[in-house]
Length: 535
Image (cartoon, rainbow, N blue to C red; front, side, top):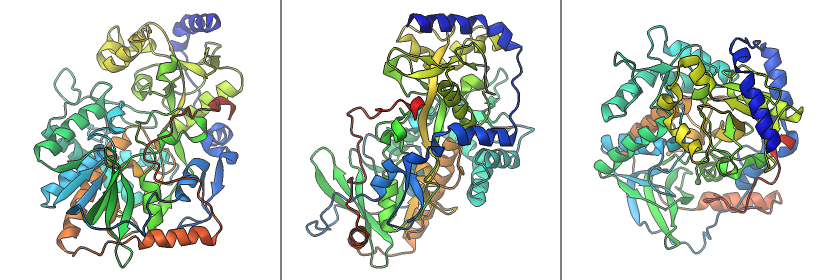
């Protein structure tokens, strides 16, 4: 720890020198080499090919492969499929995408049930700090937003999904304002926009450094005020299929009494969020407790196609000290406002506003090549020199723009206005997921997916601020589409035929499942058994 304090003082001494320093811009080929050399997605030993299901032959990480090739907890021979609920639209997930989908379906006249494994609002959305990208600036446009996002996603983005997202951005901002979301404003009362990594224009709308929390505050109130039926602590453990293979409902598990609940639904929207609590490759995570990739095995057993399941986002700046905060985010907004990334030599080593995969790879490189700082708990990282924000923008900026971050570290006697903080990439986002169309429908009839559980929109790397816009746009589209579908159809038969078929396929190829899926809740014995810098 004494050495860490000496290295901290070295970083503090180089501030004025770094303030005048210009970081060399990496060429596209330089970025590719950096990512291929150090990004966890290129650690081939951590991946394997799937042997069963619609994505047979595709590679993914072992942790996800175990779930996709896993078995359901249900015994289809003894479960009686008598409905406890009969609805038009079942929304699975109580985060941003789920709340928006439920609101839209209800607004369109559908009978809606929202079920969530934890409490309404418990989600990754609550933890989104950096803001929501919307092209509202006078010199900006949805076209600019489209181009930036396509570049950030390595041109792997589904252009139809991306076009839908960026074009609906301004309307989403208006809708959130009408509901009462309190976005930051400048001295003249106009919406204030900030620039994020990988973006050519400032287009981040923020609520200090707790944007997601503010949005969920408003959405949760709307769901409750409209008296939409909510079932808390009741995750979906299996979907139901009709006689034609479409989705016809779901089986929930009431975590309070361990009883199964049967939902007969004309349409189902999966909005279960991401994958972080699988702790892929031993990484800590910024994700909330319920983020165990539930939608993926559920949709996969039904025959739903997945896309880009070999790519995950590691947010460049996760906390590694103090140990109690390991994995928590240090918002990208700080780097946008001038914070530097600094190695143990007191040197900057990357453009802090490059895309997340580039910045994460650069931090991992510094640690692997001996320029990182080790904590007493054996974690290794680099400095994020947050006091640069006040140095660049004037005293009081950190306190005004990042109050939640300031208080978070004050609990551990760290004043980010005056001292740097140790950081290392944290598992943050599931780039891929269930393949959807522009109405958020999967390749399984009547099964829709919204938010982080879906794939294709962000390509193989997401730009900051696009996740909040994603859940708003496709939550709305899923809600409207399911309400319209339910008006024009009759309820299908409820069966577990797809589960029988999948179990038969597992047996045919000789797979003995290693896991019950979905996982529902993570296994907390400690999962971070390998130090990420050594992977």
